[in-house]
Image (cartoon, rainbow, N blue to C red; front, side, top):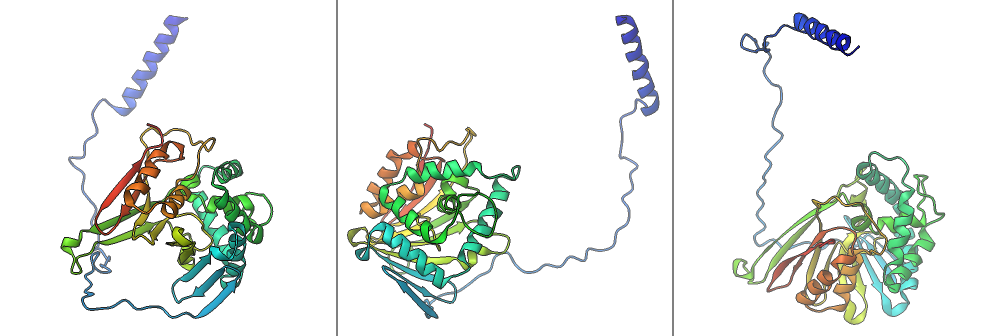
Length: 333
């Protein structure tokens, strides 16, 4: 039987060789077909020069103003200016007031948020259609936060959200809202960049820093309709955040002590399985740091000491007038 099998294999090989031939394919005699000239036209230069010498920034006018409790939202032409005054209520009360004011200032916000969330999930978890696994992730990470931040999130969610589903149904559930506030910690597929120039190279003699939040805008550019600046008025813990409506974590911020912060998501060569068990959100740890520490070194030290508690590796851009550093938080050392 073995001999017969080998004989059949040899006959099959000979048949294939007789059909295909034994010569190696060659393109020596290949003649490229004639083609017409390209109709593509350049749309412009990639690099554009701008001269802002002696040009002062223009302050946008307020087109509408809304207020509930400790929250005031001023609507501008291209962004929203938000003030949260913690002298007028607890974190839960401020979270609730913020949500109630959002309903007045941007009634379509929850639809924008849901559409953006599912655009992002479809891109990150493209092999899945059921995102219910994120419910556990949302609850674990929310419960890991300091009580003040949990209360603030719950205060907003109780006004804006309904139900506990994780599906696109034109309403935002509690867990979906929590995940939106934890995109860098629970979802990702984001990236950012920044640069800074020392004071000895600037006209004013002071440091200049810039930062780009390179997030996907959503299929309908939803994020462009959610830009905001939030002023957190809380005594010595006061700071200003540049981010998105309805978000309570930190993406970019400047403290009252003149420290600028920006988050950078980075990859990992280990490709370890994600876990939220026993972990917490670095974007909220960064908020704690900017609220409670007045120096660049102490903020950096706080994040480094807690790096093993976070879900993903990341970098943090930190600068003040004299110094600039990149904090590299490695989750698994």
